[in-house]
Image (cartoon, rainbow, N blue to C red; front, side, top):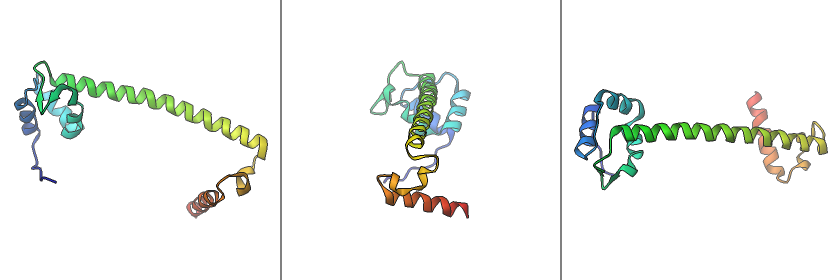
Length: 129
């Protein structure tokens, strides 16, 4: 792997500009890079460049907009995934308890993978200590 030299935020800005990216608010761009890491931000610019040369219309604001959209979208999706997860666990626990009783989880015979059941209980007991 090739060694990469440390680049200051100012040098990072110059790299982006040298590749054709328009940066209208340099102070905001510097703050954004400092808070989010050059390489992470760079990944959000992949659709705006080819062979490390930005499209003529590409701006740093475009990168920020893509980043912010991804952030918001991820949080919306995770919120719904959590809702589904909680509901599935609740339904599973209800149906399991209906069949095996409230302490049915203690009996390894109620599970298809008894070795895994033992492993989980051993780990839980170890954490209690």
